[in-house]
Length: 71
Image (cartoon, rainbow, N blue to C red; front, side, top):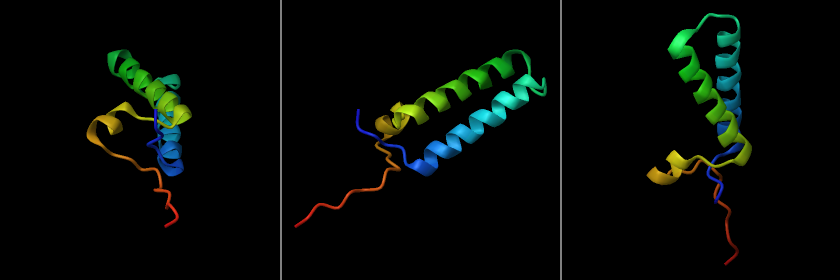
């Protein structure tokens, strides 16, 4: 797997996951919507840890900085 997430993208995903988890644990969101968002938060954390997003790969998106090769 080639990395396709930048550091900023990873940080945003972790922050969103933390917000969702906080809202779920304080019962602001609950029920089916809460569980779906909690699963999404888990996916965000997992993709942040491995620096790879399968959806980005499918659509050919990469937020990683491009490394310049010497000529």
